[in-house]
Length: 342
Image (tube, rainbow, N blue to C red; front, side, top):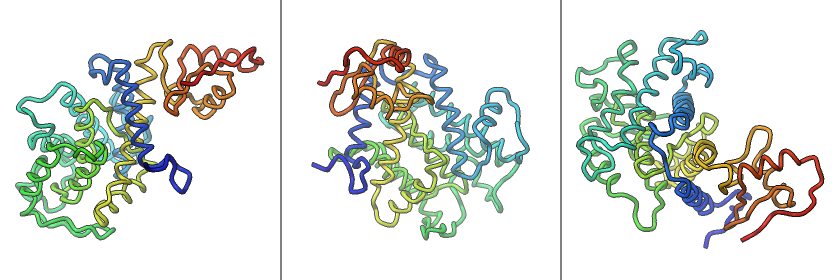
């Protein structure tokens, strides 16, 4: 069995995947991933964060507060270029479509998790408002939003060379078959999606917008399987690019899969469990953390018996009410230990 920690002291990849599986089990215990119409505030928080971070990875400079003002009020706060506001609005519209399509199911989908029509639609939504004002140079008449490229692309800075444009339709057909085939018996879902994402970015089927489209497609597939979207934060942009490069050069998607696993688990603990779990339901400490009380601080309090909690399968759990009781009494000496282990 792989060690729970790596040589550098961080959790091993197997431990990261196990933590995600435990997080999904916690989510299922509180009813699973809700429909956007049933939990609008939860999905709105996810929507802001995904839109901001996914566009920021591509170089968009709008801050999160500016993204929220634009999406909520239609106000272009700050002195940014028109293109940046259009990129954010377009991505936000595409993300909303992905959430609804993934949870509700799409017309003509059949047994497939992802169709070519959906793939094209995501790209169209991502770039159409931007290209209306800022089309790519020398855009071919058949290269409009949602249509595959008719240009050869130069090698990327890391040395990755996209295939000839004439090969794109066949490569995407094969890519869709692999995606819809699902993970193998020994493959974790996030590694399967990491393989799919790396493959899509290597093909680079469109003139522009491939990164944003690719991340949205991963999230469509995640949500269809009951997982929240994976939000790759802009602070992890360098790690993300390096993981894609490693997947291409060494056929090793482990780092990318781990990045997806951490992102999905973060979404479960930040957005879903705190809102879906009642005040008396046991949830991981990470779902009860706040700006003033971190998860490590809660863990220490539980281990010392100051916070009522329960340790299960190597993780500490508590309830919102127990945390509130702890906050109210944290400066008083506890009369007895309340932590239990199972």
